[in-house]
Length: 462
Image (tube, rainbow, N blue to C red; front, side):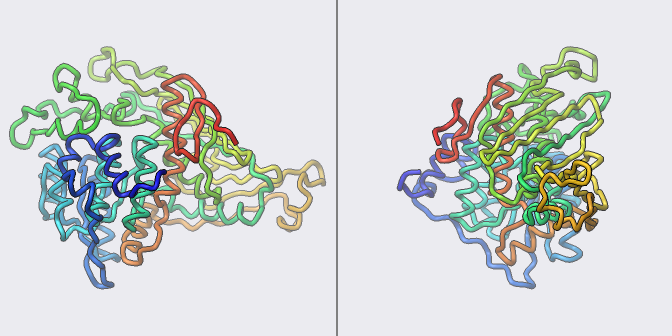
């Protein structure tokens, strides 16, 4: 980066790369260019934390209920406001939490009594709202995926450093004990040289993934509870007409379209890549990424079997390579539910974290199996570490990962300590995922220039 004020650079990013007209309206140009970020309320041990939900669809409503549960039991927090562009969702969540509701997220960010926001919008709005929230002095629980582009990854990391806000990325999987036990074992050298990690995320359904129910009466011309602020929802994505461009399908089934999502990569692989980045311990950005797959099954709409305009693949796989001599291989299909084990291979041993392959599931132990040939150890120095045993099972503590993840965020809001899935760890996962999406769409191998923080078509010079 240049010697310019990063505060100014970030606002330039908001206007050009991630902000769009809606966000530009949220933060006047003069204040973006000259003012410093707002300071958040200093929370005392007995102060109740006021949280607002921005994006109150299925996921946002669920996360909001989890925050309300944590807040009423052990963490002294409450849902104080809700927001969505669909009036029916605003009303339902406003009544549930007995709080205020709005169609315009800017009203929430301008409230001095709101300490934190849950961002559970479609992916293309994650970074713009999170960045604006931090500038307004709010901490952020940012649903996965962390954002939509690599430029947004950099902006989020820089903004957390500048504003000192707490950002927890909402992949609750990472609060499972197995990943932290795996990190400890790898740190103790129990694998020897790390070579290859693998994982999967598979599902199968008759309807096809993300073909959620469409509320036929809802839309930009809907009255009362059926009103959708379509212009706000589109935000910085390419402009679309509700009728001509099948807006209802895009709104209710946004994960099928590149403008608002990365499909399997951003919805599901984030739950695999983020835990892997915790296991590995060392900070690693991918060096080289390639991806493939296709729409092999779900090319029809479930309602009438007509041709679907789905853009994201129903079957997807990627390979990510890292400069330290380590690769990650992931596979997924929405048309077959059989997983492969989640494990990390070293030259001297293999560590299996999820034998059944479900990264969001629970296993009572993780397994270390040494590489041996007869009575000879491939890496002899590991024999003492394994105390002569060929296989070791390490117990894993069972936790409610969602409540643990939410609780960690609320605790960190008071302590100002780094949360479990901070923006830097999540950012390394996001870069891989974003590169894989681009690799698939362009049909070529891509590289990451760590110094420039850019995706490039050729390997950067050493």
